[in-house]
Image (cartoon, rainbow, N blue to C red; front, side, top):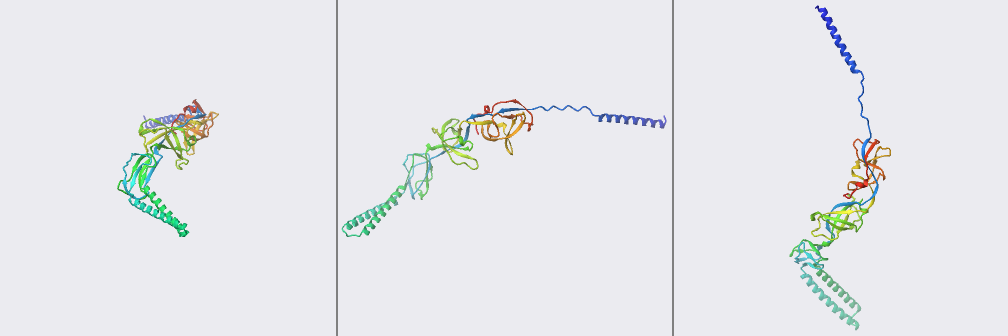
Length: 365
């Protein structure tokens, strides 16, 4: 085989390979049938129909026990403490002497004042007798009466100061603090003892401004003390303070026991269950309320079966439900599940419905 025929054969082979590659490339550029796209159906959700219904909100609030009637006893005279035999926890009677201060100096001054008053009284009687016989001037009698009045005033002053050396119990109670010892020198306004009335024990809790309008003095409550186990004790609202904290928007509420349980002490942790009046409330499940920077909102199903975002104003949380104060009307359907992929104006299919009131139950705010 000549060199020329070999070259011709090679050129023919290369031309065939190039043609095959070109046909293959053209075949790949030809449009084929497009893949099938899934059809977009309605978005599946569950919804609940909201209605107004009377609801009693039971709320458990944490607080502490404290004594309403507690007196700090101070000395009004100065002197050495001569008698003090009471300790913390001791019961005392109303009017019982608690502390005795040294009164020797005051008693000496009192004896002197009594003698002075007696002398001034005799002097007045002598001048009055002389004045009746025209032997003494009226101004001398008037001066003697003034001096007697001054002496009697000094006498009453010393009697009062002497009484101040005895510190007595203003009411029946229990000693909670003893801050001095016999032999100590007490100056004026020294804190000696603290006396408390155990019958004045109350539970104090902070209550939101949203709940206060539904509470009144005398309303029944229940109180539980963790230190005494899980027993609930009956009580009533004693006092609702008129001012609120500017930072928490809460007011103090004092609750008294119907019968103070044994073992209850000031400072113990307490749980108070309050029951508000039954008021018509529009409730939605807590899981249905969502938050964004602009505020709370819910998803509703409109009349055309499409999803719509609805801003709402919320109130109390009652168990697994939230009170809606504004933004919804009774009878509207609120979406409770199926939020993933949900968008404004999307067609939805409600797979289950119910009433919001059936999901509300007593609980904590």
